Image (tube, rainbow, N blue to C red; front, top):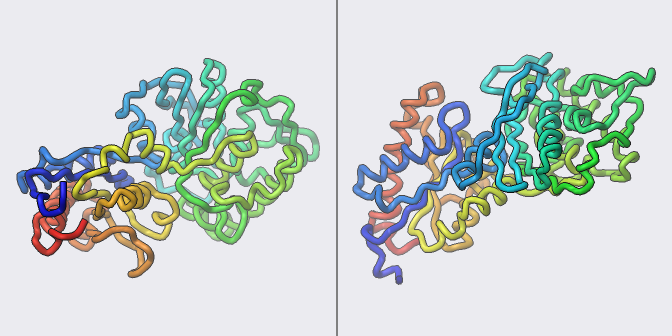
Length: 388
């Protein structure tokens, strides 16, 4: 089909947003966008593709694509018992860190930031290994932890002890007392299982753009806590890396994801992959986008971190590769002009009504209106008729 023959009646619009964190799930954003398309009489031309990049909603995305749900007992970042859902297919499983040791929408304190542990993630991985799963993907986004994955490593059998030979509590602040590491008790099936860490950032664990420096503040840490966590992660790396013969691993891109959980996975031999690319592949995004007229994506906050591997930027890059123009609706746009946005246009809802940040129903209504407006401009308007 040529450009000259494209009409609204033969137009496919792909709706591929991520979640609006703390407000709407990706699937709910898709529904609001679809209503906007329906207001122009084009709902039947819309293809839903709610995306994920390894953070909140990753298991849900897998379940939508045909995986099955399994409930497992776990503890949260502060040791409270709970249950979590993992997605399974055959001997493969997807684990979502945000659903185990995430912030759960809480405003955390510096004390909570210092004491948060990834122990629950290790418990889930151990249970899956015990049940015969040999291909486990861990979605890293949305964690409340900055413990270098010490909790996960401890739950999987790594011994972390102080100068007196006593086991330390595997939480960020306690890592400063780490004096010795013993890997002989690691879960035996780790050696044969495939472990993948799905990452949505490229920060190292230690450095000026490391886990503590960039992410700990949003997890409740103040300046003092950030300093302590940064020192703790550097000490953890100095103690563990010589034992596993992986010197310098803490400086590798992506190792800082989820407060260093990515680094801990790599210590165990895990492959680090772009969470956005992994889930787009799993959802069959390439086939759905190819030949479409427009891709409409979005997320709660578009900022510099979005450019470092987040889902909406990744799906826009895929669309560009396929010759499909993309536009975005976001809760707020913090990207400076000319910062490298891949979108033909970005519509920020807080510039329409700032109350949307605290009002999911208002966000739904604004999403519907913005989607209709972008569709009218980029598909139905003669001004854009010649461009894709």
